[in-house]
Length: 279
Image (cartoon, rainbow, N blue to C red; front, side):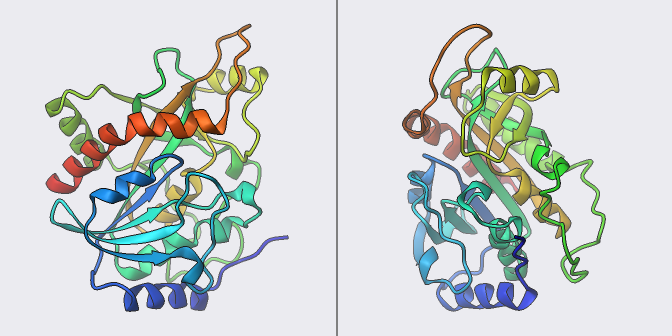
């Protein structure tokens, strides 16, 4: 059954956050599985646990700390989501993307979305970071688009354009930072599945065939809602595991994803800091 979050509920969330931080964030950052320690770089932080915020969805997944961290990073005011919720946890798409709506109401103009993803591209290995150039919205194509349901024109148009989902200018800043810091930043297409089961070998063959370089269970709904609201989006995937080649049996585990995060965080932190500094 669909659960549609109302404008009043979003306003309540934004009001609570406003009242519990000294900062006025311009940038929102969402941290994926195993990437929560990136929030430790935030200076002069205020912490707001998800479970204390009225109407706010709470993550049940290991590796998602479940709190907002508001403060300064590279001199910019940021609001960091230390963890996110997913469709597979039983939330509706409207609930999954409520944090992005909250960011829009708070006046945030740019979101940086990160995730842990499986590497489909044969050139990728665990520990790589991929700059998302585009995405394939399999969930949305199957009917679970976060914009399904009543459209609130105060947030955005009924039929938003998605031809430039990931901001070209922000991508250039990320690439420049990576070049300066000698980070091998991959570029590719991210595909979102519902989860929580990992992919079968047939799934992997199909996803490669349609042009995906990395696969995960998040980010695309958030990007869709952010673009609906006119926010700029930068997407970064941490390649937590290289998916098995044809005919190779290789088990994927959530622990593997979390362990790879420890390798990825320094690279991703460097790229995000560079983008914030130059934006």
